[in-house]
Image (tube, rainbow, N blue to C red):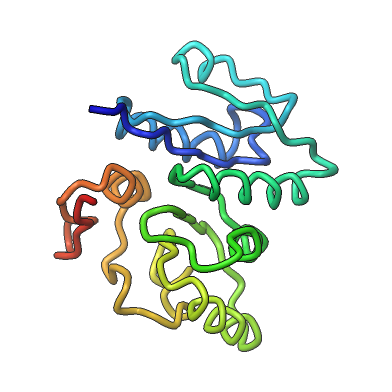
Amino acid sequence: MLPPRAIEIVEPTLASEAGHCAALFASLHAAAPALPVRLWIDRHAQVPRLQEQGVPLQRFFRRRWRKLQALWLYRRLLRSGAPILVPTATWFDLRALDLAARGPIPPRRAFLYFHKWRASARRAQALARLARRQPDLALFGTSQSTWWSTWPQPDRACRSWCRPPAIITAALTRARVPICGGCSAAIAPT
C-alpha cells in the first residue's frame, strides 16, 4: 500500500509563530498529528516549534513577490495531484487557483478556509461565475455570516458551522464521519 500523499498547506504570510496563520496550523496539527503535511511558508519564517515537531517546511515565499509565487505554486501543486489547503484564504487565492487550474479542479483537491469575507453584489456575481467553473472547490468559513450568504451553492456545504480543525480534518482525511456535530454531511472515501 502506498503512503498517503502529503497535504500541501499554503501559508504565504506565515513568518512567525504569532498570529492567526500559525494558530490555525497549530490547531490542525493538534487535531490530526499523523496527517502527512508539507507547509509552504515565508522564506525568512522563524518557527522553531514547528521545526521541533518535525513539520516539513518549504521556505518559499518572499513578501514582495508572494502573489506571483502563489499563482505559480498553485499551478505546480495542482499538476502534482496532491491535496491543497489554504487555511487563510483570500479572494486572490480563490481566483489564483481557478486561473492556475486551466479547467475544473477535481473533487477533494483544493480546500480554502476564509476567516473573513467582504461581501458585495459584484463579488457575489463573480463568485457565481467561479462556482460554475469550479463546482468542486471545498470552501469553509468561521461562521455563517462570513461565508454562507455569498456562496451560490448552499446545498454543497454545512449550515451548522463548527471549529475549523474539525471541518478541515474530516475533509482532508476523507473519513466517513460527520463534518460537524450538528450536521449529517460526510465526506466519503475515494
